[in-house]
Length: 174
Image (cartoon, rainbow, N blue to C red; front, side, top):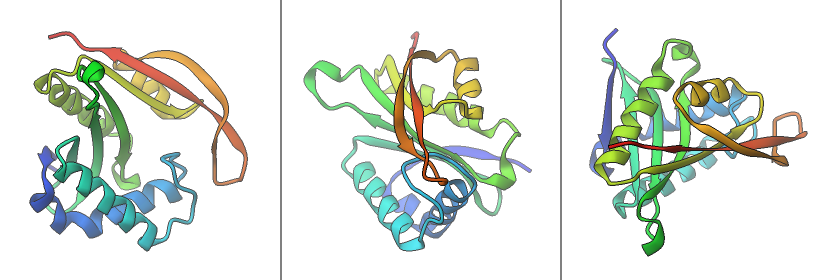
């Protein structure tokens, strides 16, 4: 199965909207802490993706999609800081890999492609957050992200519990 990772703009992304909704629902319903609680309704997921596409259209968000010949398998976003004192920074957002495509290196590939996009946009400082103790922490650490610290009781999870979130950064070279 050949997987393609590419940046998409609004016109290219629109046909994928139903699959993006399904990707977000699959991720949330399988425990991903990405700002939503399960079960995620299609209307809420659609609204989220419409906001993402608005940000892409406004040219301050980069959206990468991972697809095979037939379907969307993953996505990740890079939010470009627009403040004059922060135009060297960006926030990594919503790394999503469909449950049927996990543990195959796709998250790593998406992150590496995202870092290349950051370099192309002269962004040298990347930040992200993730739920403490999740497998994503190991991925980010293996890619050179450094933990700054954890914020206790930051994110509510599906069980209703409040869990800590870890803040990470990475300084990109050239």
